[in-house]
Structure formats: C-alpha cells, structure tokens
Image (tube, rainbow, N blue to C red; front, side, top):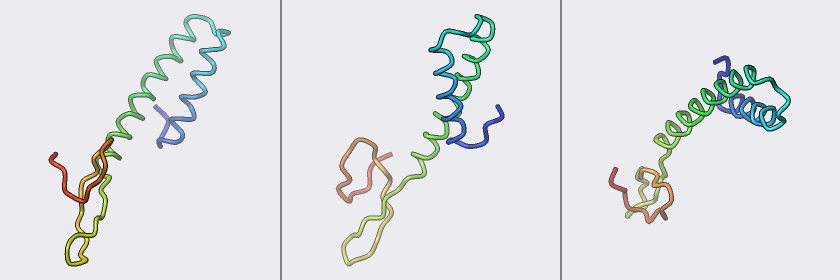
Length: 84
C-alpha cells in the first residue's frame, strides 16, 4: 500500500468506491481496485483502533488535581476511571 496516512487512505478509499459504483471498469480491474479498497479499509480500521486506545480524558478530581481517565466510547464520562 502506498498510502502513508489515514487522511490519504480515506481519500483513496472514497475514490475507489466512486469508481466501483460507476460500473465502467472491466471485471478484472474492478477486482484489483476492490482488493486495494479492502486493504485500505483494514489500514483505516487499524488506525482508528490505535487512536481510540490512545485517547484519554483529563478529569479534575478532588482537591483540584487532574487525573487521567481512559476514554469510554459510547458512555458518558462521569469522572470515574473505567474498567478496561
């Protein structure tokens, strides 16, 4: 894969989807482009998972001190550390 960052990979993936939806490509080329798209989708998914693991929130705790609290997707942050 020649893509080196998430944004470029997403842009290329969008181009692939548009070209496949157009239906103008021969079958062989469509399969080749589809395979590239699947690789890009996997790369983007891995990048998102990695980023999600790095996300943490700083929450002001008792005494005015800040503590690091892991990000909990889809849940309200109540200032209490989540169980991972």
